[in-house]
Image (cartoon, rainbow, N blue to C red):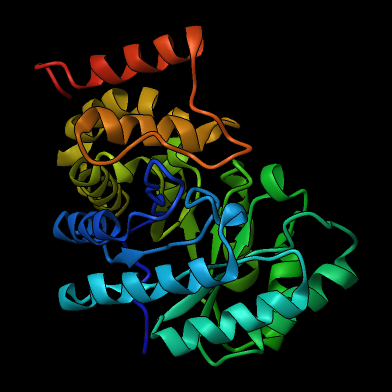
Length: 305
């Protein structure tokens, strides 16, 4: 199945019950909400989905639930594939194929970050495990492994099913550099919320989004306006500028260590989720919480964007 990478694909959160179990009923509802807003599919089991705290069986169960939820909407599921070991990552990739997922978002190992020889071997093993389309996830701030444009090009030359890259280095110059090396060989998706407009202007064609979990319609509109401006429709500039200014304080929540807690708090405040997280994370408290709520409440005021 060919994936349409040109649009907004949420890195979806995982809602937990009070006892720490996964709330699968809400998860299905949340997936449908994303799709109804115009998203193309979802990415479960990623960083925002607290993938590092999920067991292997929980990840597989989430994949199956996601496929069931987005399938009727014509959406695709592209789970995050990450593990402490290469062997387990390969097993997870194969399980994703069996669950009906359309593609894979391939991450470096959770903890061990070493040289290019080892990281290339890990990523290659996962991409070779199935024929599914793969998106390489480059997030050096989080995973301490930085896949340079030259290294990404090397992987693309050896793996035909590597078709996209989620670029989360926070440096939009990387978008330009990847395009200079590979032209249209890879689809480039922005993985950092507060540079989405700049990344689109540089050539990104999709957005693996975070705040979309609480603001799906606004996220899709922002992305579509950015695409229109890039394609020469200057009539959208004022609306794009207005929406981006309104959204930026929220989008910046995606760029800090407690992004999971903050985005889940946003969901709770809009009535679509809970701030409950799994340890070692704890919900935000004190002044940090007060400031987050101030930003959220200001965004939800009647004079919205």
